[in-house]
Amino acid sequence: MARNIPIKVARAEKDMTQKALAEAVGISRQTMNAIEQGEYNPTIKLCRSICRVLGKSLDELFWEDEE
Amino acid sequence: MARNIPIKVARAEKDMTQKALAEAVGISRQTMNAIEQGEYNPTIKLCRSICRVLGKSLDELFWEDEE
DNA sequence: ACAGAATGTCAAATATATTTGACATTTATT
DNA sequence: AATAAATGTCAAATATATTTGACATTCTGT
Image 1 (tube, rainbow over the protein chains, first blue to last red):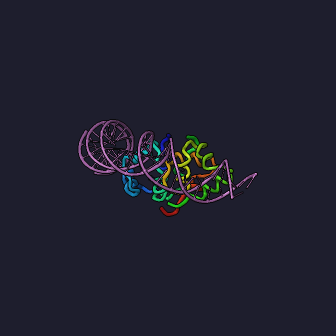
Image 2: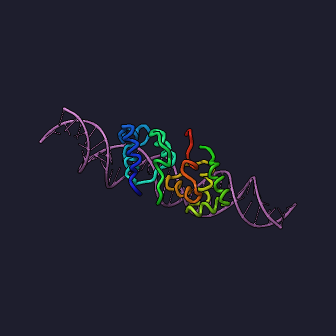
Image 3: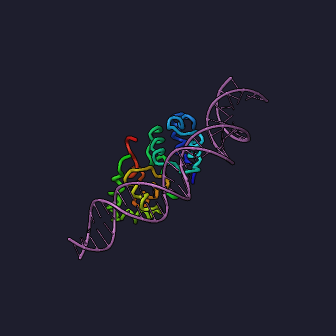
């Protein structure tokens, strides 16, 4: 999996730290970091939470052309 | 969670059975059924697979306004 | 250069998505 | 009405997402 740059950018736009985003979404900092590193595969529910907090769509933050 | 009507519709458009979609995506028929029933929470990777097979976007098939 | 915050990463434990098999119910076809 | 295909649902087992704690590294500001 590829690193998730769109999340990093959206987070920067909101001036949020990984920790802050993790807390806003109710997960651990390590999980948030791993998602941004593209090391796994969050649940769709979690993806939606992240989208809501960052004000972005699923397609903007989580689409990938090739698996 | 709410039943996922958009998947049902998209599947109908492609004239695919739950079983056929499940096979195309590499999961069990029961899991596909449960997803359509909104009983859980697939992985984003699986959501992307379903989107590719059905020719729809994440936002079209998996967005929900309220959790 | 120093200190503190933010990020990256690992291993072990826990929660939960997914599978398998089996059966009941509904829908479509003849 | 009868049969087959499609769908809905349950329980037990397995795979994997997520947590927790701990430590190393990079980034920022003073």
